[in-house]
Amino acid sequence: MMLRRHFNKLTGAMLLAGVALSAPAFAEDTVKIGFSGPLSGGAAQYGKNTLDGLNFAVEELNKSDFKVAGKTVKFEVVALDDKYNPSETAINFQRLVQQNQTPVVLCPHSGGGYAIQTTNERSNTLLLSYTSVPQITARGNKLTLRIPPEFTSYIPAFVKHAQTKFGKKMAVANADHDYAKIWTKEFQTAWEAAGGETVASNPMSYNRATDFYSGVSKVLASKPDVLFIGGASEPTALVVKQARELGFKGGFVIIDQAKMDQMRPILGGDYKMLEGAIGVLPMIDDAQPSAVEFTKRWRDAHEGKDPSSEMSLNYTAMHATAIAMQLAGTTTDGAAIRAKLDEAMKKLDPKNNPNGLDGVDAKGGSEANTRVAVIEGGKVKELNIRDYMKQ
Image 1: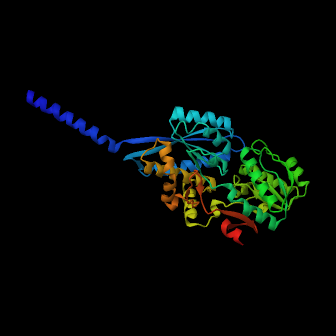
Image 2: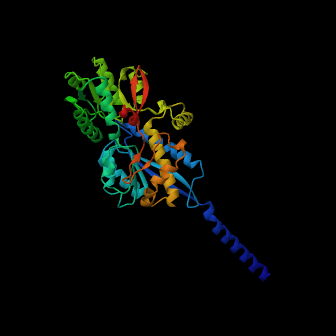
Image 3: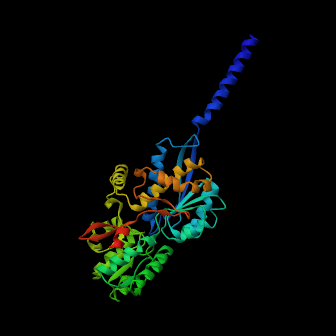
């Protein structure tokens, strides 16, 4: 009897040991991805669009039995509203890192990105920065990915198109936040270097106002050929609408934060008011096979709603970050993940890279052969910047 009890105890211990030894094969890690962006106020839709792209990638990854270092990984997005206020972003970042242990945080505005960069290297946290300002990577922060290509890549084509089609008198009527200010400085310099003239400048608070008649009237009094505009899509559309209602017949140069397809519903459901405008190529008008496939997949998953480029780019950034974790063998070491981002971007399945990003440069900026859109005859016409500038 004693021998049998001893045998049973030994067998039980061996079974328990077997369970313990096999447990890692079935272990599952939950990795929290932080988000701090505008989810209320005038830029709320913009913030939601970036968050939707992030969430869509996470949903796909969570259905795919995604593994890092042999463990199945599930991702969870922790989203906080910063109202487009960099000081709120800084507070949110500390909450995300300290309370949620997020190894990665996405922020969709440059001011918030700068705030995060003051401390993210100390906490070994990777910043996914959805902004196209060159300064976000020029600062030398070693734990930053700039998701879209630099906005300066748009400027030569924007200047050439607007001056050739409409004339050389330009008025500034864009938003007054930090990102728009940086865009304005770079664009105005290029515009004047090409022989153009800035005849008026009246930046407006796109995130707080809904009536832009007085501000638009002020710049239209200078009789510009072109209006330089942009901020969040909805207020940008109102600026266009009110300019047309006030009799403006010229062209629009639209900074990349505003998306023409999101402006369209406010402009009567078509692109007629945007005739002659130049801006970001809408995802739904992108003819690349990967973009067409992504658009269909997005609509199927979101009750027929259209994706925007900010949705698709943040979606791609999350997929690239997940692959970088696989390559680095870690979900927690921000520096190791950042070191693998270029390789990860190049390994992306085309269906997860609808914008055709080519890789990540040494400073942490994404690279691509940028394409833009102009409106001709009420329809979108795609321009490849490299080809257009050779004409």
